[in-house]
Image (tube, rainbow, N blue to C red; front, side, top):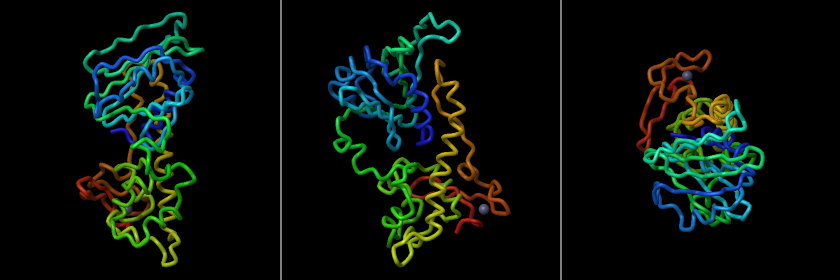
Amino acid sequence: MPELPEVETVRRGLEPWVAGAVIESATLKRPDLRFPFPKDFVETLEGATITTVGRRAKYLLFRLDTGWTWLSHLGMTGSYRFLGRRYKDPSRYYEPTVDEKHDHAVFRLRHPKEGPLTLIYADSRRFGFMDLFRNEAESPFLAGLGPEPLSNAFNAGEMAARFRGKKAPMKAALLDQRVVAGLGNIYVSEALHRAHILPTRAAGTLVLKSGAPSKRLDLLATGVRAVLEEAIEAGGSTLRDFRDAEGGSGYFQHRFAVYDREGEPCPTPGCRGTIKRIVQSGRATYYCPVCQH
Ligand SMILES: [Zn+2]
C-alpha cells in the first residue's frame, strides 16, 4: 500500500513529464474506482494544461491552468505509468499497450518539449479514487487535514497542543490525520522506534505540565521527519525505472527498522531487545520493548 513517501516518489517521477502538458483527451474505462468519477471529470480535464503536480498527505494534486485541481488517491494498488518517445530513438512515438481490464483511465497528453505522452492509471483493487476541486477548503478529502509532516507547520509544539491531557495511545494519536497528515501505519511504528517511545504509552504523558512539549516529543517530531525523508530518498533511486517504463509503478521496497520484523533483533545500537508485534485498533504495531518506553 503506497504510503506518503511512495506517493511523493510518484509525484517526483511524474512532475517533469506532465507539468506543462496539455490534456488532449481523457478516457475512463469504467464509471468508478472506490467512488464514482466526478461529474464532468473528462470535460474538465480535456483541453486544460497541467501546471504543476503537487501532493498533500497521500493525495496527488494535478493543478490545472483553468483553476481546477485534479486530485488522485492511489488507494492500495493504484499506479501511474506513461509512455512517450523512447530515448534511443526520440523521433519515434511508441503507442502504449492499454490493458482493457486493468487500466482504468487513459490520458493523452502533449508536452511542449516531450511531445505526445500517454499517462495510464491502473488500480487492480480499485481502492483509489479521483476528484476535482477549485478550492482546497471545499474538498472533503483535504479539509481538516493537519500539517504536512515535512513542513515547518509540523513540530513538537503543535503536537503538544493536540496531545495535552490525551489518554489515547501514541500509536492512535499519531495516526490521527488532524495531528499530522498522511502518516500511515508503517511510518508510525518506525518513528516511535526512532524516538524510543512505546506505542502504547498515553499521548498526554509526553506533554509537560506547562503544556510545552517534552524532550521526547521533540525527538518524535524529528523522528517522523527523518523516517519519511529517508524513505523518499530511497525511493528516488527507483525514479530511473519510472520514466518511459511501461509497467513501472514508481513504488519501492524500503527496508524498515521494526515494521514487519517480529522476532528479529532490535537495530538500535547497543540494544539487545527483540521486535514485538501487537495489534492496536485492528492494525499491527511493531516495537522494541527494551529501548522504547
Ligand atoms: Zn531496542
